[in-house]
Image 1 (tube, helix red, strand yellow):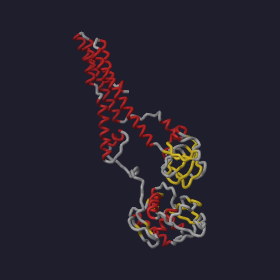
Image 2 (tube, one colour):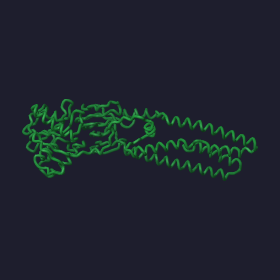
Image 3 (cartoon, helix red, strand yellow):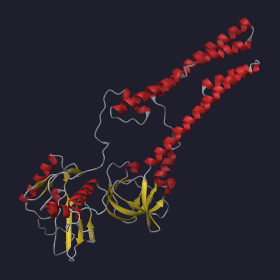
Length: 431
């Protein structure tokens, strides 16, 4: 609180002495200065708190819930018990919930458990803890606890009583300030006593001692240190480094070796289709060229292999390509019903979607790792090697997304199975 700062306390003491010696005007002037300092400090703190609260509101997780048959987009604080929580890839779970249904659902629960790898959540009734990040898949869950009633909320409540220890620089600054303050007060007290004894007029001596204390007390040291740390954070920001806490700037300033990786890279989370490749002809399409056959069939099946309401950046890119080149054509099938979806499995890195066409025939579109597609389609070894080599060439050009593992490059390979519905095992397929 600004009123309890040493400088303001000294000013109040001076105002009291002026009042005692019969000079209330001078005392009132000092009180006005103290009041102005306190009011300005209070206004600044209020503005800072309001800005922080607004930032917290903007950065708070959002939740899409189904309540009374209506789907709502709410803040995490507005989620209620019993709401049906929609889980999509990239979402931060806003409340503890029990899984109702899930398709290829993988959760990153490291915020709560410290586990570095995503874990699968497939069985109805499994607990979905608040704070988890949906790494893959989607699903619906019923909210069982909100706010401080969640596991994360109880943990946060207990951590709220823990105060962060001062940094090394703060400890040294406080120790230096305390020593200089004691030295200044001792000097001022000695001079005040000396003037009072020699002159015999103690009120002016007291005022002189207080005025000297105002001049000698090292109140500026914490301010100067905060200013230098802020300037350091500004310089780091100009270099493209974001420092959220002054302690980070202090630590970086004393570092001699800094090891970093690309974790935390800021991106737009947008992708675009840069190449279409047929197999086994290896005909290539690039943006800006006319999209003719056989590209129509390839994009058609890529759309069928993707979600109709995608959140994945790659699937969004495919939808944009189809909307641009296949709008109002016979290659888009919004009226086909989705019969079944086969999610990604550890032993088969493929996502398949089974559709029923207008003639009642089953059509299966699959996407996934090239070696998994080759295995699913029972390719001969030489054909499988050719497919893998084509994928490797695309990967060497930076055109494939490594998603499931460092050794697995994800590409979109889509196939069509006419005349019959495929069983869950790998069926025959044609090119």
